Length: 244
Length: 244
Image (cartoon, rainbow over all chains, first blue to last red; front, side):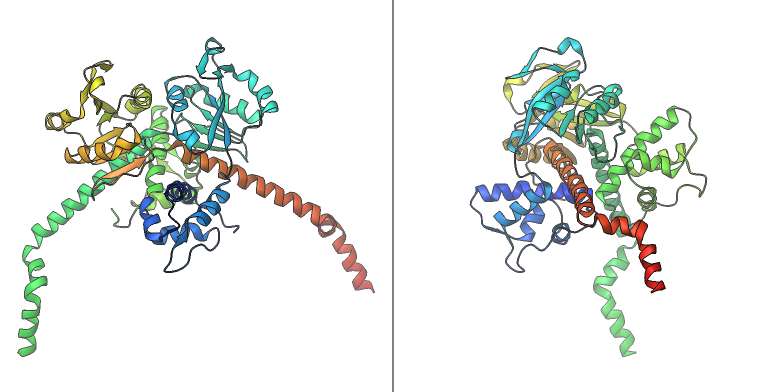
């Protein structure tokens, strides 16, 4: 594997490619073109090839990628070959919605335990076979069943305190549903889920498209004859000049 | 504004900078250094300067950025100056959790209506002042109150059908809580929320850190004397050779 630093966006796209390759494999498809695979991830084929180039050479020019080989390689790169255990911290509406999402188990993520910082929820049956434990019990839990990933959905003002406890217990990756930035030591990663940032991106795209459309309209309004002229009369003018 | 294509990751980071600038403004802070601002977004200061360079010149070398000026400029770039109206499609657990998230209104996004494709939920009070309407009523709704953004949290096999209807009614940005890719015409943007892709990123980071640590250990195990030698005995050996 290359030592170059892999952009975070590339890692995200590898997951998107992997999802699609899984579907193709299930449908019995053996080979996929870079055009088709790139389209699925909303990137151009050059971006796809660049993403894969960080990790070695894949595919055969003019033929495409072997679905099973590329799927294996990407899963291996991501380290998502086998089922991964996750603990959930929090029992509010977001936590309740997450535990019911079929997507987690479909992608090999299994919620092994639910913890809360609030004593009043401890002991309640959260989901089938999942009773809420107090966060104090996490250190004993990880001794029995090692786990490195945590999904955190607690009120913003408690996330730093929860993160500190998780890191002490050996958690190395935190998916945080609070937009507040948290401090973690080197070797621990945090991903933030902030839906409003995605809405901002959409808002930006909408206003960019509008500006583009307006600019095109203004261009047409300002130079209607020039544009027409360019397309149709220029050769005539030129030929006049040449003839003169 | 520059005509260069702005990377999607830059737009995401602009939102992160904007969140922090808002907090600074609320605390009465007038000037922020690029180091401080970059740290908040988990990027290096060079990345921050590159992100801002797409949109013009900001900041004064050695002084930093004016909080209010930069906040205004970024909000203007993103097009998020005023309150934005959003419609929600879906009434399941994710939709229920979203409508209760205080983050949306804090960032100026206001849920104006809730729609469902399932007739049995229509007419129910979903949240205070929000009664579930059937998606068929969206075209009449947008005539009264124009809206361009939709949050979609419906079962995966219904997202394409819902997206088609939204686009017909003039929706230009879709935040999709199903990982299934949907097809939209040019000028319409989609952002996908797939939590497992973020878990994949965390998994990748964890395995990368482990590999780095192992490599460092192996290096030490393979060349313990050389390493010690490099630091301490090399000059002695050299001086021996020179003396011989």
